[in-house]
Length: 112
Image (cartoon, rainbow, N blue to C red):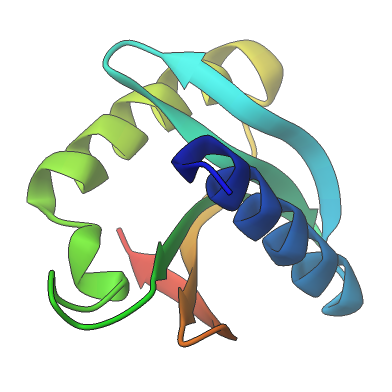
């Protein structure tokens, strides 16, 4: 399986997990300046921007640790642009779904 195929499979699994938790998927793989947001969903009245990270092992650190300051800044910028167009008055937050050793974890309100 290629890296892109693993990434897509992880995003599919994350989307299924989110739907089980009551989220409604709005969009996937939304591109913006310098990157993309993996999943945009609604959790009640809140727009949630979700980053999906997977790690096969700990050689390169934890999956949640991979959402570093640079990645968070990119996600904030893309989310801000998306909100201005699609939902200017909506409440929003950032969640992260991690997969470590194949086990999913949903980190709600992971950063601001």
